[in-house]
Each structure stands twice: as C-alpha cells, then as structure tokens.
Length: 256
Image 1 (cartoon, one colour):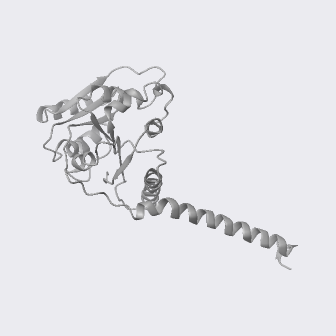
Image 2 (cartoon, helix red, strand yellow):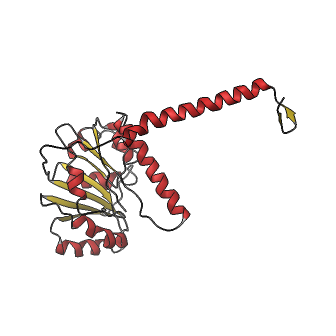
Image 3 (cartoon, one colour):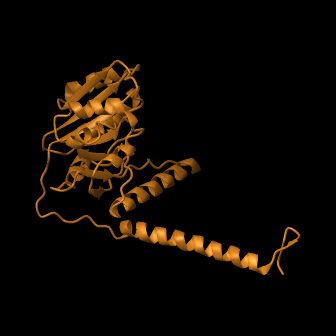
C-alpha cells in the first residue's frame, strides 16, 4: 500500500486522484483542440474585389510627448492613397504633447488634434477621450491604436481596412510587444501572444469577448448607436466589444 508523508494511502484514493488528474488533462486538451485549432488552420479568404475605404485613425494620448515623437511618424507616413485622417486626442496632457502635435501638423495636413482641458465626471480612464475622438472622426471606419505603439509596416491601414466587407463590422488585430533582452520581456511577449490566441480563437468560434485598443477597427456607427447607453458602465475598451453584434475577421498586424 502506498505511503505519503508517513501516512498509508489506500489504493482507492490513488485511483480516484489519478482519475481526476486524467479528467482535468482531457478537459484541457479538448479546450485547446476545440478553440486553438481554429487559429492553426485559419486563412484569410482571397477577395475578388478589394475596396479601399476612407479611414479615421484615432489615438488618445496623455503626457505621451516622448512616445509621439518616436511613434507618430509611423502612423502618418502610411502607404494608403485613399482618403484618411489621424485624429489625435490630447487628453489633459501637462507635458510638451501639444507643441509636438502642432509641429507634426505643419507637415501632415491630415493630422487633426482634439484638445481636452477638463476631466470628464463619472467617466474614468480612456473612455471619454476615445468617445470624443470617434465623434470627431470624419469617416465611417475608425482604426484605433495607442501613442506608445507603432505599426510594423507602412501597410497597416491598408491591411486592416481590407478585411471589411458588407457583413463585417469589426476587424480584430494583433498587438505584440517589441522583442528585447531579458526574461521579463519574454514573459510579457508570451502572455500577450497567449491572450491573443485566446481571443482570436474564441472570435473564430463565434464567441468574441475582447479586443485590444492598440490594434482594433470598427464602424463609427456602432460606437454611438449600440453602446451609447452603456458608456458609463464600460470599464475598458476591450469590454466595448461585448455590447456589439459582430462578425470578426482577423488581420494579424504586429505593433511594437
């Protein structure tokens, strides 16, 4: 009869424990196979006709002057000949953000700044500046990213908007971390990749539950017609997707 810490453990107990262990492993294996296999075999469908839509890129920034200097050019020099704009919401910044944006505006006429000078009551975080950016957008398709992110290529806007068709309402993108030396960076990149695998796979399974605001696009109409009543209670940009009736398409664009 087996021993554990000096105690005699009946064989039936070991059998039950082993059975539970195998059950848990089986459930986990089923979970991974049922959801993650969708990503493993996923391929973008070739479109017979590709239409380029006008796009409004929206960025919210608070005290991000150093990131704007480094990353904003990557958004402004996108290879996208169709009409587009960059709406930059300067959210109560106390650093040099306003002067940095004004300097960029001299060279890029499609850059529009929204200056917020007061905090919104009862609406914390990024929700209010984001809603102001969307409201000010000129075009129906909005594409979101952050001030501390830069597109991996000059085709970011083109690839994200190309996923739209008559039925698609939201395009879900991937936002990775830049590779740097060190164990912490490896752990962060793994966690980011694993999280993306989960929400991509769930979306493909018809059970979308989140997206990341550094690479997400949807139609402007959705923002105000479907979630305006929920805005005060939404805790994050990711939760915004819960209130939308959507059909997802994946466009994995790497952001640093």
